[in-house]
Image (cartoon, rainbow, N blue to C red; front, side, top):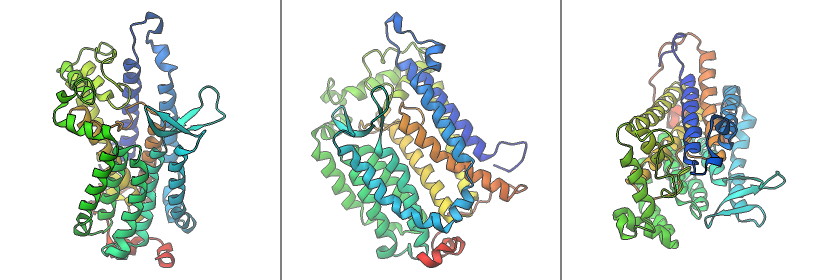
Length: 410
């Protein structure tokens, strides 16, 4: 996308995409909440005052606030660079909070949430895995920049990064296998983009598969999900129920859907209709046209992210931007595959659409980093031509471009 004042910048594209996805999410979450009780009718006022609208407002505010940060000056700060590794033990501590009595919060048999005490009502709950999912990107980017000249070496480049990914992914996978796999995939992609050798990474595939098998066999329901993925009618009222009902909703939408609010599967048939399977509700009520709109927004969002990352000159920010884009894109792909029956049922949300305050706010705030990167690029090169197509710098090239902190920390 050229830096023409008459055209939208990539950062504007991110803002518009995020706002569009969140707006659709708010409407569809409220539609999924419809009941046959006339006293609980969904109106414009009920949508405007709903918790989903509040989360959307906070998410947009977080994105715009982060987008105004002097990101280039922060990334070049030696003090900031030196504090990044301390984030790793913080992430571990946050993940362990879900096991503490009085703080850990269990939903549907899984302790994936922590409850913040002292807030009126039932308190505020959040998912530590969301914090870990975005926080590990910064830690890995720090490692890759710090070890830029030796990332092609196994012992000093790839192995420490894999160890950090493994610790976080293992802690997350104990209760949330889908997010753990997502962290592992996006983290490995980041290491390879930074100069890690793919052949060395592939040598760890058998070990990763063993860990995955152990995680699956540790919980009987996970094994049943794989069996019913191959044939959901093996257990149509149990493990295969989600997939069957999701496919029914998708098929019933046809070209233009039943109409907003007129879906049937959400009335007690489709489980998790506000969260993991919201895309099925979109397909049923808005049809192929609504599904295409959602996918188009994701494509435009990812295209804008790639445009910003390609222009970025700071190795740290380039890798952070790549990690954010990879995480968001892989998460959306996994959810869409689950909803359409192309992957086993797994509780992983559709980013910026599936209901969840922590997910919406942290995802939007992470994308605000890319908005800030685009803004810094426009200030540094106000009359720049179309975006450069230089790839992710790796190895010695990244080392040449990094800040002075590398000389003392490498």
